[in-house]
Amino acid sequence: MTSLTTASIAARAISRSSLRSQTIPSRTWTPTLTRTTLTTRHASLQTRLASTEPTKQVGNVTTPGFRPRSSTTGPSSVRVGTLFASLVALAIAVTSYGLYEYYTSFSAWPVSIRDDLRAALKARNRGDTRRAESYFRKALSTARSTKGELNEPTPTPKGQPEGQRGEAMLKISGIAIALAALLENEGRVGEAYEVLEDVWEEVMEQGKYSSVVQNEKGEYKRGDRDRMRGVQLAQKLGLLGQLPEVRVELLSKVKARQAQDGDDGKPVRFALTGTAQSQDPAERWLVWSVEELFRLVLPADVHASALSAARQPEDSTDKQSAKGSGAGTLNSVTPPTSVSLADLDLPAWVTKLDLLSSIEALGTFYAGKGLPEYAIPLYLQTLSILLPPTNTANNRSSTASERCKAGLIMNNLSQLLSSPNIKDATKWALKGLDITDKTVQLAGFEASSSAGLKEVVQSTEERTQEVKHECLGVKLTLLYNLGVLSDMAGDKCQARVYFQKAYKTATGVEGEPAFAKVAKAKAAESLARLERRGADK
Image (cartoon, rainbow, N blue to C red; front, side):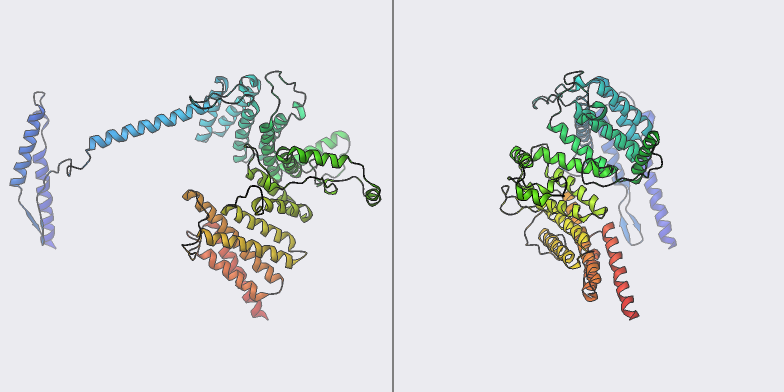
């Protein structure tokens, strides 16, 4: 050990002396030295060091002395200077493109709004929400006072088609949405609700904006894209309207109005009516969004036939059967022309996801309120969009994500039916599991899947992972709920089988994400509960 240590110290001393012998004192660097002189001296120095440096023996390992290495290792190597210059050029190009995209994104806005928006975004990204809110509100106020300028075609890059005229409300509502998102992220959901409600009234010309005169102060007639923006705003308002903070604040406003009218002692609660005139804020917005969306996408002949059927006088038999039934509803009218939502040729500004989100959100709301008679028809309509019949005009197969979403809707239907009829609930859950499991197998989302099966997911790796987790999450949900339904039906053996399958599937999910951990824990807990129950007997 001592000899090895001594040899190591000697080797380090030799290396330090070699390094000192290479060091050129500052006084030898004179302006008269040419590049040739420096190259010659450096070469002679390398030769002298190589010839005078002895080979050292460290233990039983022979190590050559220190030799300076050249900047290149071979004729095919890239010089450091060339590589550095290339990286600098690439960085400049990427930065220039980013700056171009950044500034062209603001070119759609007048100068009077552009600076405030830029300052708002910078403050938001820095976490200064108070300053960001101030700039967003200032930009929103300025935009409302310059509608004429905002309605002019948006500037576009050279070679691109010219922007459309009359987009002021889309731009104004965009600023309001950004402001509401900022407030919601700060937990100020009541204020976010007020901002969105105010801009919805402006888009749809309701409330204090109902008396706006067209072509005055830059006003344009609202188009279909403006109405679609109103649908999107209503969907968000419907979701916010379900939050306790918003509902309490709205109830307090109703009580304040009652106090002014002298009805202070009257109890206040939001009653569900199934219409867009509901007192419940969530129901009112969600129902309106579905109705308005149907008004936008349903063909004109369907509208006309429905109106015609509603105006037709009832015959004698209808009158007798309708006696005492009160006013007719949409359910009591059967128009001569019907249409499947899966067959609709949607305009470019309405997507299939828009239809699904509106209908499913309303169905989920009614399901949460314990109103299956309202929720089930909406869920069935959602299924007709996700899994259209094979004889539809579009003739397009569903994607893996759509099939797994359909499995989740079937699970929701199963839960709605579980209380009155466990048998029907189990049928829906089994159907959902069958569709989801086939999709998982075809897509190869499980390790046991065959590699030769048909590929049903063709997308980016990130999107594929999202769909994979979505489908596996739905499968775990259905397996667990089938175990619960079997337990409710008294079939403990079948319940144990489903819980074991859920546990095994959750264990096999790659990376063990959060949903898999939850499913695994719940399955283990249910299995333990079954064992304890069996031991008690």
